[in-house]
Image 1 (cartoon, rainbow, N blue to C red):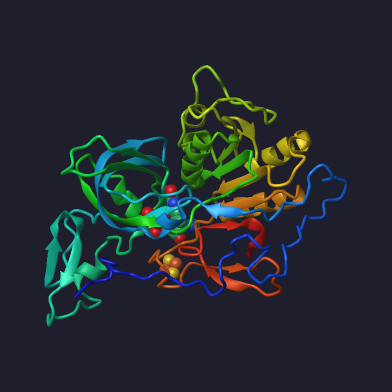
Image 2 (tube, rainbow, N blue to C red):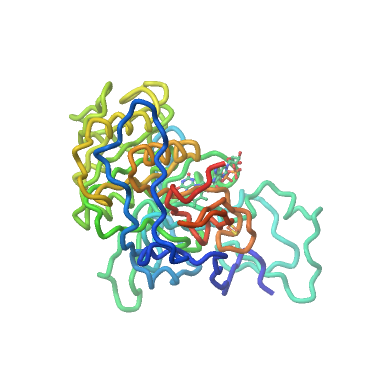
Length: 398
Ligand SMILES: Cc1cc2nc3c(=O)[nH]c(=O)nc-3n(C[C@H](O)[C@H](O)[C@H](O)COP(=O)(O)OP(=O)(O)OC[C@H]3O[C@@H](n4cnc5c(N)ncnc54)[C@H](O)[C@@H]3O)c2cc1C
Ligand code: FES
């Protein structure tokens, strides 16, 4: 009998509303949804045309269905700042993935945590089977009352490197990066991983960012633990030759999970494009850094810097869809980015980080309210399988 850790052989969740494909102006054939700019007294958005529902395609569309359970072998688990670590996992034959997709990691148990009764251990992965006919676990069993993470935890893919220069026997190999912030039970166990340790992971899950055919310039906005998918997206945009500027906002200097270029201090008063963060600079991308407490870069919210920048750069886009915003971070930040996007009539995609349990459309714990383009009524969408990336104009932020 399989237990819920194994998650083997799941089927794809069918969304309640057909996903938009953008080819015909919406799934209901009623044409594209009109832009809904926020009324901001005294601010003209005239130079910005309305966002166009242009032809969009998901990258590696056929690959979206390719996913599975993998063994990840820890290559490095490196501290980046006070609470963030970069975990690099060696995975054999990991399917193609897109920026915005995520993996579900079964975080290791604390040393000494009890095994389930009558369990059959599946190697180092802590995947357990209960023998048929054996006593099922009870809520009083030490296994269930122990201080351990039971459910897998979702982490955005922060980057990957594929190596084809391996022996035929070994097959293709991938190095996957995740960046995690230590905040609770599971991440405290991740923190203890050392090179050579094994973890079980599911992925790649969800749908990533969508590339519009008109896209020429991207503004990437990452806040806190929302930085990882933005890094992966920056790498992908660079490979497509699309210009980008990164806006990174953190609470304080010691919570920045990125490295500053030694000779290029970040701007401190005005959002000036400078290659100040190494991880973006290596892709030729400038960055603008903000901290809530003013300890580094521009003091204040990243959305304030974004808005200041947009007000100063109205000349960028004469044709719609050329400039697009992509964001990930705390919900409040993404809601604020969504408002800025609406104010300037710019298309914007957000990778949501709704708390999740199963990550594959079964538990229904990750719903958001979503209004399909052109529709009057909203429906629930599952962040794990319908997202986590959505167009912000379609999300009902609550
Ligand atoms: C699609 C997706 C991608 C994610 N990517 C990353 C990533 O790249 N890096 C990273 O550090 N984290 C990421 N997260 C969040 C990450 O999954 C949680 O931080 C992690 O599960 C915490 O586990 P824990 O057991 O250490 O903490 P827990 O003990 O489970 O939680 C500690 C505290 O954090 C709160 N919390 C947990 N998860 C979330 C959440 N998603 N949103 C808001 N509050 C939460 C809990 O309510 C609790 O108060 C992602 C989440 C999703 C849904
Ligand atoms: S996390 Fe279970 S349905 Fe989305």
